[in-house]
Picture 1 (cartoon, rainbow, N blue to C red):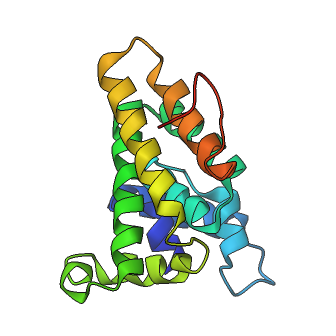
Picture 2: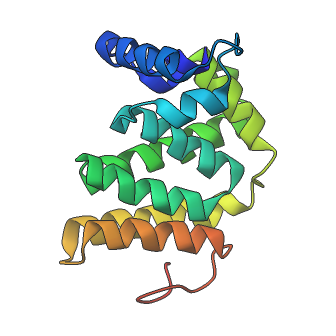
Length: 171
């Protein structure tokens, strides 16, 4: 399951990853572990975006920043990354609020992972998270700041628990 998840929807990528794994494995090993998969996979932007949501879920903001920069290197536009981060927090809030009607609209696998992450965030945090998302979006659309800088600033703001970070207080 893990190999399929990290290989993405591209069957050729999955085939290449399997070839790399079988080449790496010795005759003594008969199990493909996540560690083996991680050591040989060709990382795609799609796979990294899922990793980004995992790191945000775990509140591992240092790794999230690293992944954001890697995504840009893979060719993802910062506005796409911002849209994904915004969607992640909106879905997380939906799951935390317990609205079964809205949760039903989320992919079951994603909803399960969001339920696991929900315990790591408090409802009160979403006030400053959504204010920071709005502030970031306004600056993305109306300023000359580098979009990557604004996304990094947003993540640092969340890491600091909504305290002042960067240009001015996000309000």
